[in-house]
Image 1: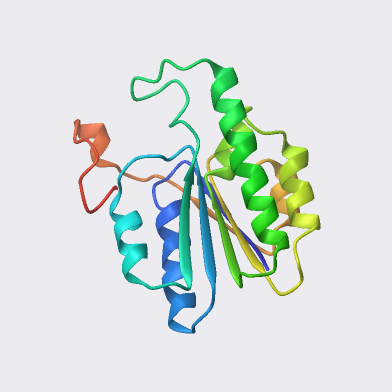
Image 2: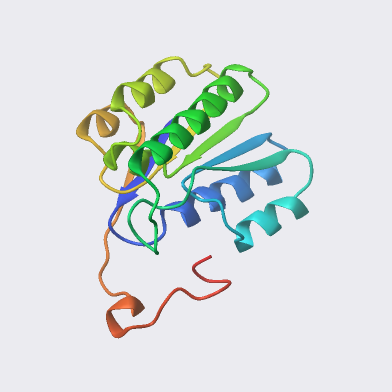
Length: 171
């Protein structure tokens, strides 16, 4: 299956990680590749505890033009392309039952990766692999290609009251 978690609300990565947790309970082999995330988070440490059948790779140089980012767009694009190449090679290796491309949709919407590369990834996916894509602003083409699409819609968020990300809840 192709599963897409998108939208402006919180919970896309959390949903994908919940799916990974469930799959690990069935001894599935899971790969999580994160685009633009290269810092410590609770999920990185938690995945280490789940054993050798689940692997998390962080790629990229952080989020573009937020949280103090001053890198040129070209550096972000290079890092996204490198992360994509790793993801594509691992997907084709057929070592994995579930592959999660966390924030790959955001990499497309931020113009770090062309949509055509993600479409190619979907079309070349081995039959036995379930592929999960996450990120803001999913293009209609990805919605059409996915088997399951969930849109996260924000109804209320603590950030609106000035409450920043909370350790153990948001990262």
